[in-house]
Length: 337
Image 1 (cartoon, rainbow, N blue to C red):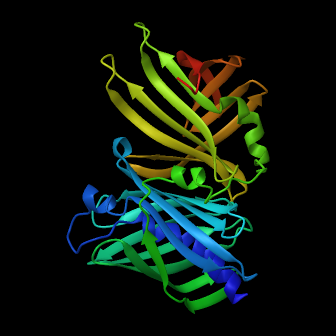
Image 2: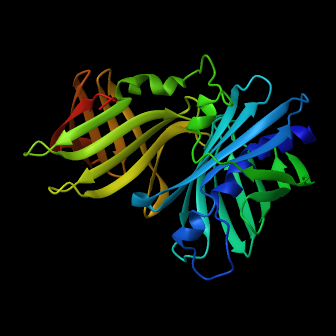
Image 3: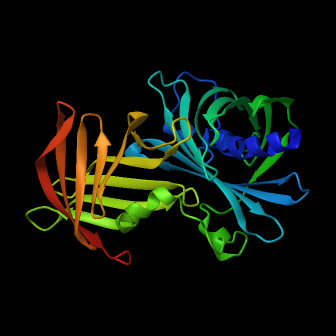
């Protein structure tokens, strides 16, 4: 049981720590600190069956959202098949002196973490909820080498499914030459599963997957949206950007939808420059109409055909959504363009 706990938390810890920057003891966390570990990292571990696991982590920065991103893959070292994944979204809080992260893993767990820095040491505390609605938590300590090419991390005070682990052995991570995960797939070091079971809640949203655009009167893109699956079929991710008449990118953000294990409900989390929050949910109005709830407003999307969406906003009055405000049309864009 103890090893099960270590492996389960290990998936979380690998991305938590690496999603945080290599920090220097100073008042403000700068972009340079957040991007200090950009790139791909590798570590090895052993699972409860004695199988060797290759752990890959990729970190980058989204400028328009002032957001640190981290993706962590656990891969069977013999078969090279992807076993599990973890997705982390990291921002600097209003104090400018600590990071806050929102995470989702491919097992359906959701949680948050907070990070503080002291020289080459990062201290991270995390807490989340698993699919059995059981809270787990722990503390992670990571020490970076002076050249920034290796790190050693330990996990302590872990509580998981009613069990306690005081501490774990150090695990070494090494920075690779790759700047993203694509070369690892191309070289066969990571193989996608032949079949991935998509969560049932995603079925009604299947037609949204892909790229969409709204044009202005001049025929230029005023809004771009990309929908994709994530978390091995457990998440629906929407990335949107608005553009002015000169083509300059304006307001942008991410919406991540999935099952909230604390409630069992389909939930949407919004992520942007201001941080992240649980912002709403969905109404499946009919086969061709969805309602994206955000506070007292709801964005209706109606499929006119497979490549055309009519969208408009409704407001809630006396507990009922109504209206067709700010109506616009979205057209699906060929992914090859």
